[in-house]
Length: 143
Image (cartoon, rainbow, N blue to C red; front, side, top):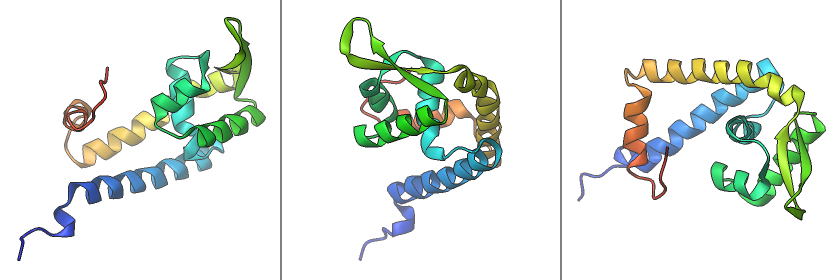
């Protein structure tokens, strides 16, 4: 019989940690900003670069197109983002933050930083060590 057990499976722990992080992010975003955690990856992407196509947002967030489209629709109905025609390709639409969306940038980023710092401090590790370890498992290049 093998010494392997489910609780020594790194995939289990990564999935479990991701789920717990999502629950806590959702709790904070709903309570403090009236937003769902599903919106955070799209907003975070637009905080880095605006005027990008939905397909680019999908690539950067790793979310499927239909889900990203729904999130952008909802953010648009909340007045946080807007779609504009791409002047280089009239069939394409570019996504931008509105003034209201831009106004959320600093408080959202600060709150998320506080949350991430608390998680990392509780484990006595720093962000760069965790990022370095996890990025070695990814087939994509990171900044």
